[in-house]
Image 1 (cartoon, rainbow, N blue to C red):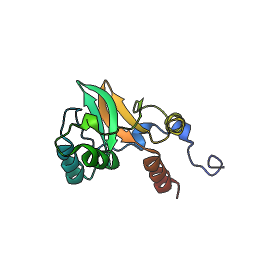
Image 2: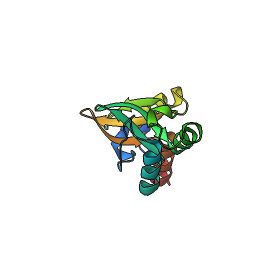
Image 3: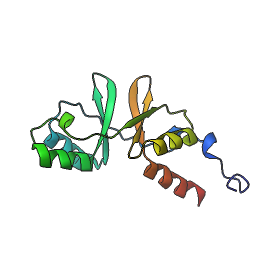
Length: 135
């Protein structure tokens, strides 16, 4: 139906159109307290965890809060729970990414270009994008 109304299908929209691009990364060795402050200062709900240039996961505010509760502020982010990461490129279609995110509940899509994280995409962010562009 969306196609008949003139809306593009998810298969024709690249990830780059919907991804969050204000992106900071953390390392597994960073203290939970520092990561919590970084999240608050940057208003980030998720942060990619990158180890020696390779994405190894994504932590959310809830993950950091749980890690702080269990391990204290000086524990490393590697001691906090992490979400599964779906690695995609900016040119992948939203349809493909949505299928991958649905296959791994609570996962986050980390958008990587030439080995560098350049964005994030969640099902919630995808829904917000669609709401803004199909109204």
